[in-house]
Length: 166
Image 1 (cartoon, rainbow, N blue to C red):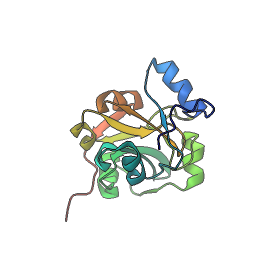
Image 2: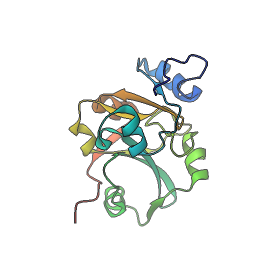
Image 3: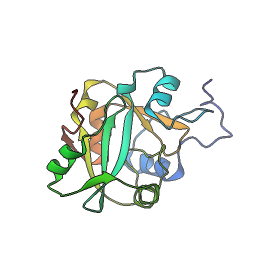
Image 4: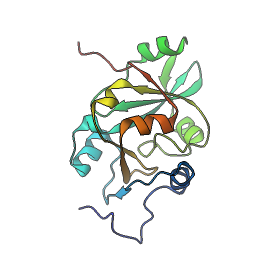
């Protein structure tokens, strides 16, 4: 059940809510009683395809955090990220680095409104949909936005970094 009308619960994370205000964005933040940490959970709660969910994933590229925005039905190809950035090593960032870099816990990282400025790579697959859904700073909240606007506010560079089918 969608309890987005429950005003006793803060909807968006305060840092993310402030980012929305600063950007002048009016979005509908939905809160769900069950966690929507994964793309599958978020898609089931929203009632959309997993590819319409935006995963905000933090990687370490030669030790420097980088954010990759990927559709929820695809996986990031770290070799393609490495080539795109011209670095030697790309690996998933550990949970402490994710929180330190973004200000959010894994499962609730939004595409923008982070504690620090990082390089953002946005996979072109996000543009396949008129609207995509992303985390609003908590594992229980999501918001819809057209992908071009979302990528622009994230400061994302459009790239092709998803794994290709075998």
